[in-house]
Length: 209
Image 1 (cartoon, rainbow, N blue to C red):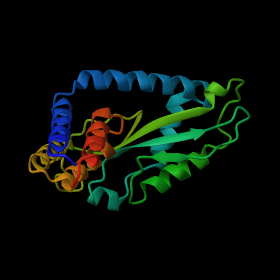
Image 2 (cartoon, one colour):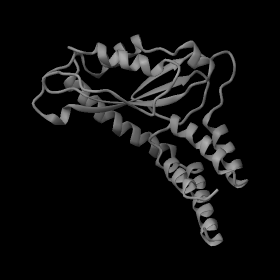
Image 3 (cartoon, rainbow, N blue to C red):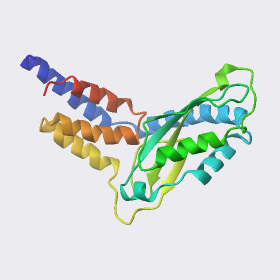
Image 4 (cartoon, one colour):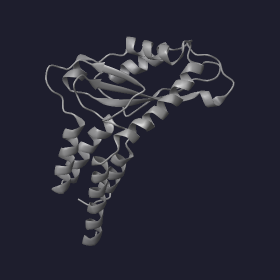
């Protein structure tokens, strides 16, 4: 690839980083609130007991595993599923999944909701994507979830988002694309709705080694 194009790709990546660092947290919060409002409306209509009961049951069944806590696992899992108007559970897809037993708990919870849904006549209310945020006490993160599962601090300090942003900047300036993407992947895991992360990753993947 021509040197001029390589330079252009680097400038695009650098611009994306500056955009991420200057991201308006207020706007991010507003988008999350709008998304959560739509989710709440669907659950209040479809789930028996409404969104509050859905949250209560999930928090009762889904907990941080010891292994997840000790590995400082933090992230937002997107629970995407369908429930037909005659209350048949569809397939659950976990986008941006976590490890160490967290995904298994979410699957088990979803299956346990069988029979707890109201009938409907509009297919609009059969699909829902719910962001479930897993976070640890005392750890800074910019992600947002409709439901937050908070675990106890594992006894040592887990790294916040700012650490990974700083590492990403450091590796980017040194031209270490692979390490930059590794830091980006952590940030995407924690904040999957942040489009700047994906734009930066695409520009880096287009950059030759």
